[in-house]
Every structure is written in structure tokens, then in C-alpha cells.
Image (cartoon, rainbow, N blue to C red; front, side, top):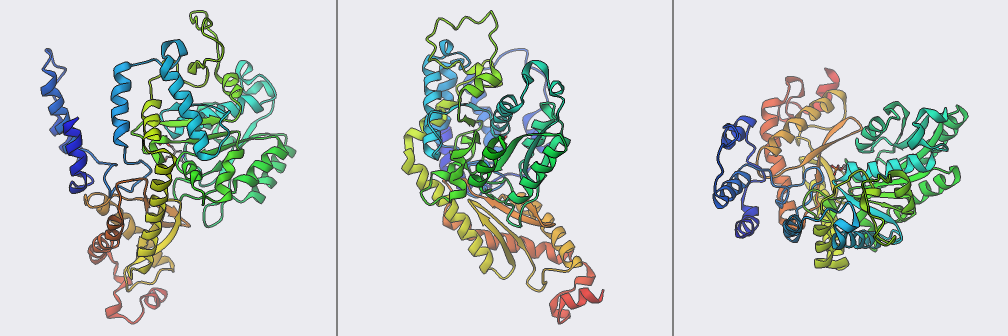
Length: 490
Ligand SMILES: Cc1ncc(COP(=O)(O)O)c(C=O)c1O
């Protein structure tokens, strides 16, 4: 614990990542076979500590802004240690009495935090993919007019269809594949330039599919898309689902927590109307990996979708108000994921989360403004705590095929340069054919100074790359009056 505390104190001084090759990391680990004999625990822990602290990418680093993995709350780290020590099996109430109750309380608190009915059912899972899967299968069971669990997908004679925006995370493809519907039965609905779903197109598609004898059953709305943080008009989607008797699932793996803010938009707060919501504590509740969460408005839908009663389980002797979590989801034996989430919720409360989430969003806005003010950066978008931008050399004017192709190549290489620099870690988005840099701030360690450093880091690396990559037909302005003129001539 002392080593961990020292590591956390010194985190800002370390590189975000040592950016080593696979070979270097394997060599550091050593390639010996399984030890024949044991070794002292203190020695092993010291060695493992060194291996991890010297050869990891740190998503807790104040300048880690890639993908959506938060800085882990220290109390969550201790929570995992304590959970492993008590080691309850939170599959059956009798096997983890206090742990089951803490999980149930955590679910109610998360629902309360984001404005979802606290009478919902729910459980903790490993992450966003699994949280969305839990809702997906509850929807399939609830909306297929035949007993799909017993008879399978073909028995109804109609193909089940699901709908989501083009910007939906890839979990939805896995779900369609894994649960037997097939990815062709997924209908991607176009978005506007901000990645928000076009509801008029959705409704026309549902009508057309019904007319063609297909069976629409599920609409997925986004509360924060993975690339840009876009939020679909959730109240309007809820109303449409009610009219067409469809299950309304919200993928809020990233953005649902932002609904806790009093200033959150009505579109985001509309997640309260969903039949099910997926939300990741290991994203915006700052839990250490892994922690995802599914909330389902009517808990009975979870039991309907997942429960079996094998004779070798004898849990009937516990009062029927008890939740046996194996009946709520995929897992049978279950670890105590809820503890780390519960501890963090207690440690900072609603006020603490309001402050941290608000701060992340403000920092992402500050980054957008800083990019907009920089002569070599183009600020593209900001939603929730995601900002997209790209490097555009000062003498190049964006637009035109050759320039855009070059900017895509330049920014693709720039991303690698940034990620391996150790100074900053961002990821990418592709919008309208443009390769963009993308910073996502879910990090209570990130401060304004970290954000203000970004334009300088990106422009410096961008300039270096531009000097070596620029093709001859896009010569510098110093040698031609207008590079776009030069391009149109070519
Ligand atoms: C909107 C959204 N849904 C689902 C996921 C998948 O979450 P996980 O990686 O925890 O499975 C992500 C991950 O970034 C996401 O942003």
C-alpha cells in the first residue's frame, strides 16, 4: 500500500506510457517456464510492483485522455483488496449476504444519481459491452411475442430487428452476432454532422420494416457516443418506442453519469424514460477496472430473461425479498464489484461527483477553445467531456481532396507520435472522412495546466512530421502564394 501511495504521488512526473515494443516488455518479464518451487511473497510483490510501474500505460495519469478509461479512485483500489479478502460469491444472497445488499444499495444509488427510478432492478457487470448485453437480452425476451428462450429465434417466423445510430459502439454488433439475430438484422440509422440520430429516418425505417413483415423490437439511444460524446434526443426516442411498443435501451456506458448535473440537457435527462440503461462506473464514476452496470426499469424483466432454477441450488430458504444475482444476468459465481463503486459514492457523494464531472466537461471545453485559438489546430467539436480537433499546418488550407488526404495521413502519423511520446495520450475519431485527434477527459487528476499544454505538444510534433511527410504538390506557402491554388492546378 505504501508503494502504491508513492506511485500515485509521483504519477504526474512519469511518462503516460513508456511506449515499449512487445519485445522489450517480454524481455522485461522474462521467458522462463513455470516455477518448480515457490518464492517469498514480499519478494514477489516487490518484483510485480516494479514490473507494473515500469512497463505500463497509466490511464490514471493526468495527461491520459485516450479512449474512455478513467483515473481510478484510490478508495476503489482498497475496495477491491477488501472484496478479495472477504471473497463473497455475489451470485446467491445466502453466499454473500452483506455483499448482495451493498450491491443492491449501489444500484439504487446509481439510479438516484442519474435520475432513473430507484425501484429499478440492476446489477454490476464487467463493463459497457456486458452492461449493454444484459439490457439487449432483457429486451429480446420481453418483446418477442413467443417464448424465445425456450423455442429459439426461428419459432416466431418473423425476423427481429434492432435500431441504433451509426455512431453506436461496436458492442451492438457483438450482441446481434452472439445472441443469434445476426448483424444483418441490425439497422443503422443515419446521424447529423454532430453524430445525433435522425429520428425521422428511424421512424420511416420502422414503418417500412413492419410493412415488409419484419419485427422491430429494440431501439438503442446514445447517452454519449464513443467517438464524440453525442447524445441522441432520448425523450423523443422514448415517445416513439412507446407508440410502436418497442423496448427502449440507452447506451450510457460513457455519458449517463453526466445526467446528474443540474445543467444537463433535457435530451440527456430523458434516459430516465428508458426500459434499460447501461452505464460504466469504470468510466465516469472513476472505479478501477472492471465495473459496468445495467439498470432495468422493471426488475421482473431481468428475472424473465435470465432465471433458471436448477435443483442443486437450495436458495429458497432465504426470504423472497432477497436478490439472487445469478437470476439477473449472465454470471453464476460473481465477485464483489459493487464494493469499490459503493465506497467511492460514499466518499464523495453527489456533490463530489457533480464537481468532478462538471470539471471534466469544463476542461474539455477549455481544450476546444485552446485548439480554436491556436493557428495550427482546427477545433472540430466538443460534447460532454470529449473534444475533437486536428493539426493543420499554418500554410495549408483545409478542403480539397489532396489537402484532406494529406491531413488525414499527417494526423494519423501524428496520433502515433503523440501516443508514443509519453507526454500525452489521446485517441482518434473519424468524422465525415476526416481523421481527427480526440481527447476524452474522465480524470479527476487532470488540471487546466495539462489541457493548456496540449496545443504546444501537438503542434510541435505536428510540425516535425509535416517537414518530413509533406508531398511536393502541397508545397509550403513560403514558396507559393496559395497552396490551395497549387492543389487545384495539380
Ligand atoms: C458508448 C459506449 N458503449 C459501450 C462501450 C464499451 O464499454 P467497455 O469497454 O467497458 O466494454 C464503450 C466504451 O468506450 C462506450 O463508449
